[in-house]
Length: 116
Image 1 (tube, rainbow, N blue to C red):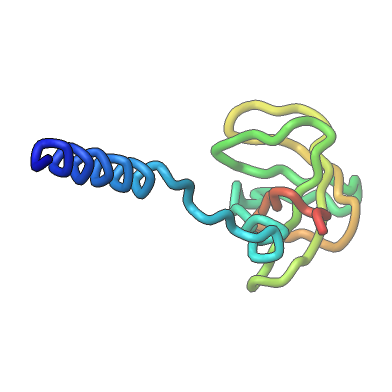
Image 2: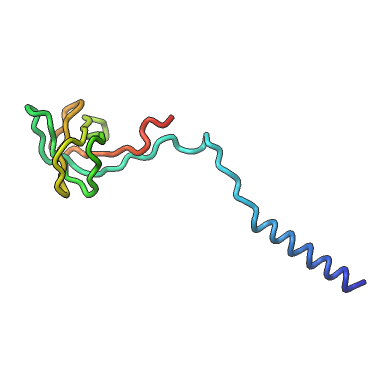
């Protein structure tokens, strides 16, 4: 009798321990997840040709042609650029689509923009 009760207690303890350790973590509700990622500074404007409507940007990671980036000055959006043409690490050229970029402005790539 003692042998059976010791076996039952040990078996029950193993089952309870296994259930506790393999239980999945509670899922985070979708409402609690951020809708957009934080903006990432990817470069800096090094030259602007206002007459021709383009800018040259220096950055560590070159965006894809056709991609849009935002230009920030003093943590406020100052312009938008569309990557257009020649890319030669670490520089790329981009057409100004809105605003007025200036030399020294930060270039940000916003991940998942528009997800709501």
